[in-house]
Amino acid sequence: SCRFRITLTGRQVHGSMPWMGVDAMPAAGGILTGIGQLYRQIPATDAVTVTVGHIEDVGRYNIIGDSVTLWGTIRCIDQQDMATAQERLTNLAEGQGHSYGCATAVFFDQVVSPVHNAAEWIDALLPTLKQVAGDENVIAAPPTLAYDDVAEFVKAFGGAYLNIGVQDARFDGDDIVPVEGGRGIVPNHNPGFYVDEGTLLTAVRVDVRVAVGHLLGRIAPAG
Image (cartoon, rainbow, N blue to C red; front, side, top):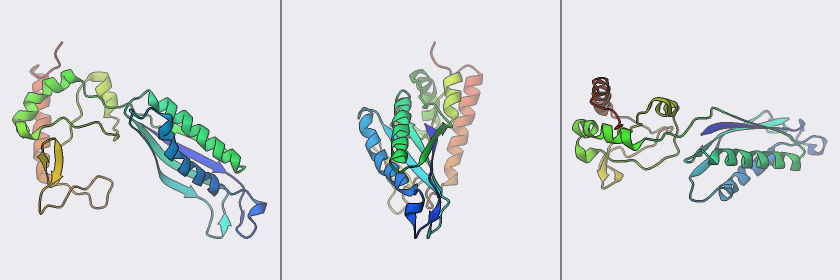
């Protein structure tokens, strides 16, 4: 994943005389619309998402501001798609800016590698996970586009990324479904998100047993 910032710079003017200035807002709108086509420029078998989560405008309801800035993220399952997505987004932003007479600046930062749980580490951890949580309560989660800089530790030293269920839910096969009469399943970064703090005991037990087992040499990847 990475964060991006796109700044479109025009020329401020009063809303009553737009021809005297350069409006960056149409270029921003073109970028937002065009992002929906970026996926068609990357193999459909590879998961990728481009999200604009914040837009800054220095104008006012009756004033065309001199700049608009778009903040967002690119997320890829396959790291090799990142360079392609960045190139396509840059081309889109610069093309839209040029079309409306704006100067365009595109920046990428906070690059984080994908988290890959190596099979040998999962094999080493599974007995402890099942002992603590119960065999029926441990499943292999499908790939997601969420990211975490713990990826850098896993890449450098090995290990695995685990998710602990903290809401009113249960397993139905390999699917997670809401418990009837519960509070439902609410994703993070949502005002309704909640945590059943009692479940954190499971997380602590897992962390402690894995740490102690690894220090004693009982939990380690084969080879």
